[in-house]
Length: 356
Length: 200
Image (tube, rainbow over all chains, first blue to last red):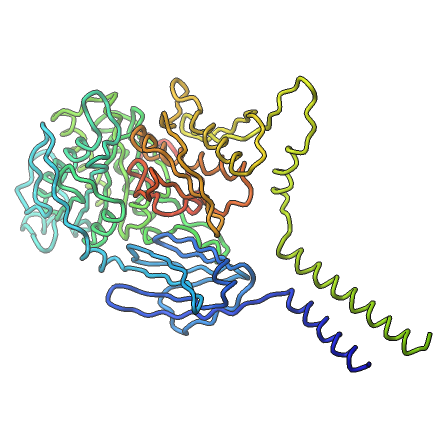
């Protein structure tokens, strides 16, 4: 009898203990070419009820109850864990794919690094250039003589000119210009003007102006073609620019310049889940560039500028000073050749002021 | 009753009490009804007086003039969670468009609503959401944020929201904000704005 009661007590004790569940998760990773595969292996119920949220800069896994993660000692990304939450901060990642597989139960996360994705960018046939827009310049524009009246910007070491070399040390050598929208994506439409055409026309004019200063300039699109946000980021990151400018139109009648927001949050878990990316260490310079451009718009175009901070992926993923510039809406301003020249002049002057 | 029998009965009672306690603890950990769920259930149980319209109030977070504004609207009562979600999303896209500075695209239809095992709510919207949206980065951010706030304020137990267009995952709505991933991560920041100082 006493033995039976003892067994019953053991069952009772184990029932209470089992109520306080803690799971164990085995985490391992492997690198093959440009793909990093991370695998979380655990019991069926733990994997089945886990919630995975991914972005290009973080992976967050919420398990149904507290877990202990057993991982390889030298993991390539920063991780953070608290109770049932696990976060990974990603760097230089162009694509994230997540799978849940069973027998054995596991979550598989495939990360494609930026360099690998760039090689695999599909070649898109360029759509017909819209009427009234000049033929696109080559992606890398060779140096030309600087025109009078515009302050010279430094030149790249790969294509130096004797006169500019003597002027001052260079900070800006390579610039990536990102004309917004394209293809089926018109952007803001004002009368018969479409934002995508104006973005591209200003980008080409600016590219030509900067090339004349000896800078190496790349455009994320060179014709009226659709380019995804990821493709823009991967292309720009691959060029390792000293400056990234994304060109768009505003819905209002003044200029707006966007920079990425600051990475805030003292809690390491929160930080791991946040969307901060490679831009963090360039934020101060991005803000300086935004202010220099705003001052230049005021001087050259006599118009106000709103400075904004928004988590836009083309900004927070960029490993260089980066701004997204919105010019006044095409519904309020006509962007003929003359107006575009004024905008380009203001942009070049703003960049020169930032570079001093 | 012998002392042995008494001891046995006492042991059985202790055992039953222990099982009840352990079970209660387990179920309270895993199957607790949240406060939000209780609130969502409560309106359906309210009594409707004769002659009174049977409605419930939803909160709409609309992007207007460069910011999010919250308004409340009474809509006919629905009891099923999916019907409530449909009503909320349809009301959001029915918000005034012209003359109020709103950037909500016109004629958007809700094609489907799905919730996966991870409690991510998938909103399948008609292509008008993309075709009729022509605005800047801030407007796009506010449109998506307004939708996110509206859905999460009215539908309990949603871990995140993902937008599909015509049943497909799309890269972006208007060329600024990504839609390849659920929305929550993009709204951990408050947007900031300042006028460039005159002497800068």
